[in-house]
Image 1 (cartoon, helix red, strand yellow):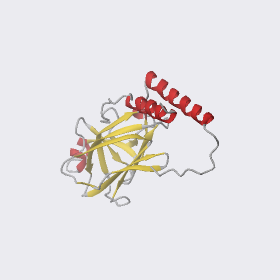
Image 2 (cartoon, rainbow, N blue to C red; image 1 turned 45 degrees about the vertical axis):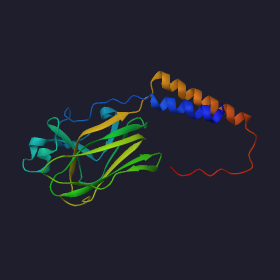
Image 3 (cartoon, rainbow, N blue to C red; image 1 turned 135 degrees about the horizontal axis):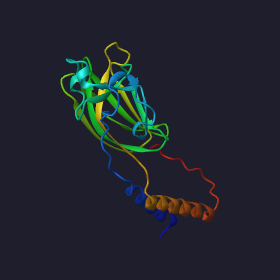
Image 4 (cartoon, rainbow, N blue to C red; image 1 turned 90 degrees about the horizontal axis):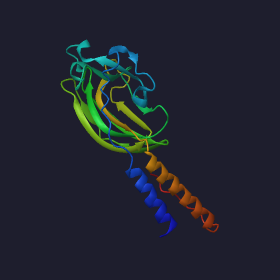
Length: 205
């Protein structure tokens, strides 16, 4: 078997062994006061421009239907874009969530980023105030989730999210060993390969 083929096989096996189970984030263990930002490290994540709000806080608004599994939901604190990353800078997977606009109809656009490159993008999601809308995704191995809204900067641009399904990608000991083996095979291949005179061009992801 060629070293490159072996390396690919080992990496594929390591990625396949990543855990794929996590409870959706319901934000029900937060204050729900509509003022306090979601703290860094919550559920192992870092939220930019996010706070929690109780569904009962503002009857008649979209917040009243935003919480689909408990008393609270998260919302965009300034009515604009929300960014989510891992607190330790690692990778995570996103399976989806439930979204609601607080005051008027608007659109959301979700993006998944990895090492500064856009790797996933959703179609525009139209949300209103009458009911939470579920968006299902299968985004694997990103380091930042960006949720942008069409009313960003408007006085009534706020929107909410609940039951956000995020899984932290933490290799188990066996998969970590596979990654180490794959890197070792790759290093061996580099030592055995003669110096190349041509330049390889990598296709952007």
